[in-house]
Amino acid sequence: MNTRNITLRALLLAGALGLGFGVAACKKEEPTPMEKAEENVKDAFDARPNEPLKDAGEDAKSAMENAGDAVEQKADELKQDPPPAAQ
Image 1 (tube, one colour):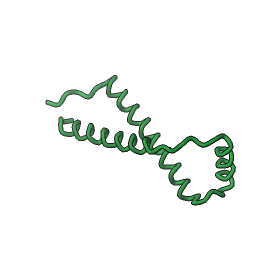
Image 2: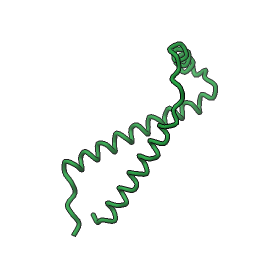
Image 3: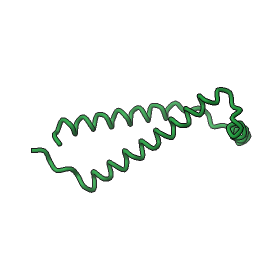
Image 4: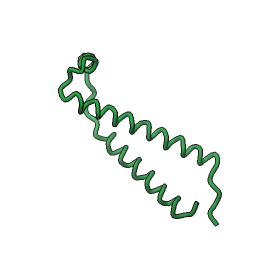
């Protein structure tokens, strides 16, 4: 693996993390317990307004969390067993 590939991977990782943190920063107020219960009931019965859009958002959130976990795991692997230096 050459230096250019390592640099490209580092830039891609930084971009992905930056995007993830940017999305996480757009957080709204915490709903009350009653609002949470109402939302959960509506979600269970697929009765929320714009249900497909909300489901897609929940799927995207889950995918972003999974991607973050995978990045952390790979970073830990590389810390434990770094690739050999390019010559």
